[in-house]
Amino acid sequence: MAEKKIPLSKEQLGALTERFPTPFHIYDERGIRENARRLKAAFSWNAGFKEYFAVKAAPNPFLMKILTAEGFGSDCSSFPELLLSESVGVVGEDIIFTSNDTPAYEYKKAKELGAIINLDDISHIQYLEDEVGLPDLVCCRYNPGPLKGGNAIIGHPEEAKYGFTREQLFEGYRILCDKGVKRFGLHTMVASNELDGSYFVETAHLLFELVAELSAELDIEFEFVNIGGGIGIPYKPEDEAVDLEAVGEGIRKLYEEWIIGKGLKPLDLRMECGRMVTGPYGYLVSRVLHKKNTYKQFVGLDACMVDLMRPAMYGAYHHITVPGKEAAPLDLVCDVTGSLCENNDKFAIDRAIPQVDIGDLVVIHDAGAHGHSMGFNYNAKLRSAELLLREDGEVVEIRRAETVEDHFATLDFEGLRGFQA
Ligand SMILES: *Cc1c(COP(=O)(O)O)cnc(C)c1O
Image (cartoon, rainbow, N blue to C red):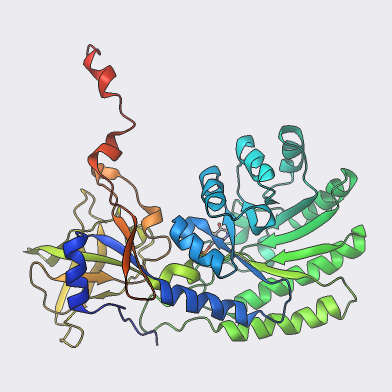
């Protein structure tokens, strides 16, 4: 069971909304830090263990700075994400650049920063060499295809656009060797939002075996394996969080067998989780704007799909609580909606919540990853602010709400005046 609590009381939230109008996202620094320490502890048996936070999950430099202080690196997938990482002083091999369909200027920036470049395709070896030059250290992304079953969000590996086939990996590392690359890593990511911990143990197993085979066949040494991200979080109250300690221990046993047991060079274990790092510690705080009763009951919020698109995009469940009404019976079955002119702009469908009144605060849980960052501006909706609840109880604004001026900044109203329609 996952307890769905809010780190602020109804009164504290109410006071906060006088400083910061709803809707806003708020992150809980204490929760993020404690969780980060737990993750590190679960893998402390591996001297070189490192988590590279998947920046796309919550690309806010304040959050990144907290995670950097906890010893995490950055997993970047685009030029702006590389800049964000640089802005918090995370450079060099504390960055892994895992992108796909990558433009040359992004590779160039990654190489300039000394980031670990993780290639998505065999053809990118030549592309990287031609456009930017090959770095000393290269990582390749493996797609196990039919060797590995799929998972709901990422799909079956053979349908996924990511990574090298097994044959291409052997060929790819051989080409890299011939071109003078000396240092190697191996990466895969085959699950997203996966709550079954054994999935990650199997993924490590897959990579350890492959490292043993590649090392033997090509006479090369690997420095690390990166098992990707994808650790799920208990979005539903009845879900069970992944037992990190059991995953750590399961991977340790396989490491002893496949790496130490086979006399291979010690290997650093890396991962690049996003969701499980910040997801449960972010809340979307909104207010009931309207109630509507037609063929169904609707509770309309002042937040909408641009603040959190997961329910509309994947039918994802996000728990909803009404501060101050935690103990009230859940006797209002309704659709909880936003205001976009899209009928899928619903945070919940046929959800039982307490009876709410117009003006009540409503908190949507587990919005701390792939929440604000997936935001968009359809219907010319403006993106909400991000706040941080510090460990001492202070609340700081770490991103202000967008204004109309921000939204129109790319339009040329000057030019419009002289433009004849
Ligand atoms: C999205 C992504 C991650 C992070 O995934 P989470 O589900 O947030 O843990 C890590 N690595 C790659 C390559 C990704 O695409």
